[in-house]
Length: 304
Image (cartoon, rainbow, N blue to C red; front, side, top):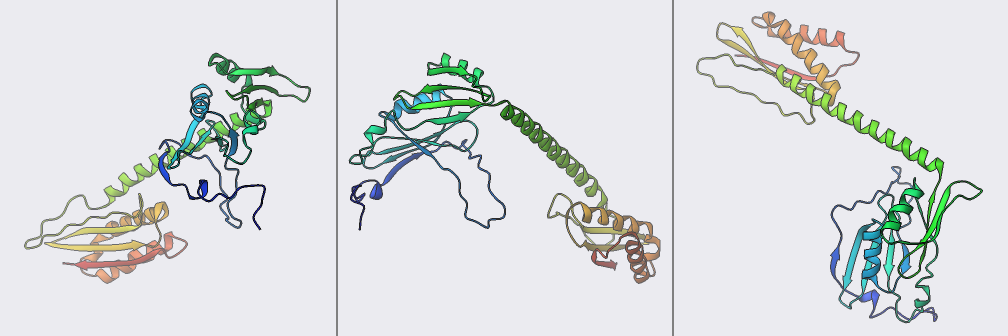
């Protein structure tokens, strides 16, 4: 049986058609999420604030409070759905007009106390006061600590601004941790770029001229650096050895083993002239002795 307290939604929001959506591309949700995924994702999406003029309220929150526009949806019926949020966090306010027939007009100016958290109540109080925000209570320090004040929107809906010393300390710690994380990532990226340039120099930089033979090689690693390897070993007397090898794995570890392989190859090149099989066996033995596990997937040597 349908709930008689509420009128049916057919022909209104339920079947209304969207004609335009304004969602600024620079807006990004700062929502954290669990990596395990054992339970369905769940978070608070928005709190409804009933207003009498959505455009006026939108200007209040965006221009006076510095909030961001999340979405501004227009419907074929003329209905409008507006969402805004503060600069930090995931709390969203839906600025809604009362829906006809649901007796929601009484909520305008009485949508309930919504509290925002800041690290500096005094600074926000002064900033918003200069922008014309009406505070019903200036910053106050209660016996339980912290500081808070209250203000209203153009319709009289009540809001609170709250701050704790602990919050300020935690935010400072998070900023430092985030700055250290960015610096660590920057250094890692820089070191990887240097490693890439060094590895590229390990590949043949010149080719010996062989009568009647044109040859070339190029290597594009799956990541910045890796374990793919090729080489042209000049054996003299118009002969050249083509080397193709692959280190199992990718990234820095494979690149280090690739450098080890290249050094072994070139240091024993003399023995490759007459006995290529002994040459590869010797390279394999040295590589095995220098590593705890067998990382060389394959190595092919062809002498021309």
